[in-house]
Image 1: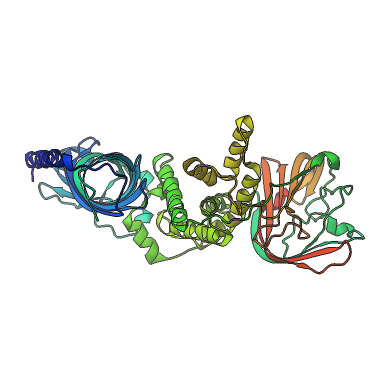
Image 2: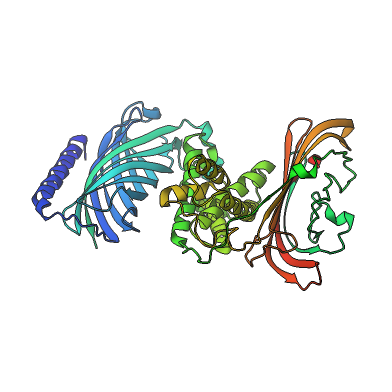
Length: 212
Length: 365
């Protein structure tokens, strides 16, 4: 999937979500009731701010557990691929393919009304792959990392069970590139002696949340 | 362990017998036995007019001549608020969430602010840690015996702040330490760090919790409220955060110092100087100032014992300016389980199983 396709899909998802929200808005509820378990799917864009890296489609889904009206924990699996340009950390052009397993706490500012804004603080395991456009002599890999994620979101409740959810998050992955495959334990490598890449990514997604 | 300044810490579970005799105590037993590793010791409730000597346990490594302050200036006494009767509702899941939050918060700070190399963790480092198992950590003494217990102290007070009792909070200290050791560092998990974090965290945490509860006061407002909350936050930072988030409730029943109106806090502060020091590693003598204190929460003879761990404990500290830098020693011992023994007349006896945490440098004694 190239950049044009990514942008096309992102715009389509955005349009469909907004259309759904407008169509269903009259059914909105304002009661303070909240449900313990929700399932979510989302899609949007991821923009990696490190020089030499681009932006791409980000999508995924997961489960949210609301411990109270003000606090919830979600587990998400998300995927995003971004292009790697010539010169980025000595890499040849290609694609950085990331799978992320995220554990986020959601701190709701209110549990009443149709609009439920919340803050996101979480961590994620980032499994990062590198796929060069052309074959290279020596295998290179990004080192997998755990990273912090901060952001915020807004639930637009369409009914007591269904909500449109928008999120803006900042993932702060610090990693490096190393020749592979590794033969020793990762703890033997001193990160402070590596050329650290700050693969910080701004992610903006829209999704649907179905509560049970 | 540092070579230039040999230091040592001990963690002890021991028996303690405290007695107050109507006819007075032998002079030897009236003094602090600070430098000794105690598995059995004798103490007493001292008459007010008997001053405590600064250094009464001479060892081959030192001879001290101290000039203590008049006892009338150095002795303080506080009486905690009246007791309450209703126990708070424990919130173990919230406690667990706070322990996890503390670990993630500390990790995030270490990873993004000082860029600590050991904070570069991933699924892979966690998998390796479980595969390789525990090892013995040879980190710096100060890190292993002060930083780690402080970390455990945060876990422990998270339990206390969410209504857990001593044992439940101790489990928080253990669980938090186990999580940190196994998944939050790229190092292999360390068995001695697990022990010192858990054990030291329990001791520091319980006394921090109890002292903070003495400082915080229901109904305080204005400047008094500010200084009480500020001091309480230093003594119990996790509890302070909980008070900010959940609202303060100083009438929380079961809080330390409120369960038994006989519990009291007695302290001594010693400013000594000049001190003449002579040791095997020092030729001649050196004049150094010395600050020492002793705090008795409850009474070593059992007054104030309400049946809960650390209803009675003693904190002893000593700060001495050494040849190169200040040296701090701390000795904390609290009753885990105890029994008042039958007594006759004005005499009283108190037999207990005590938990000790002692942190000191040998050359500071």
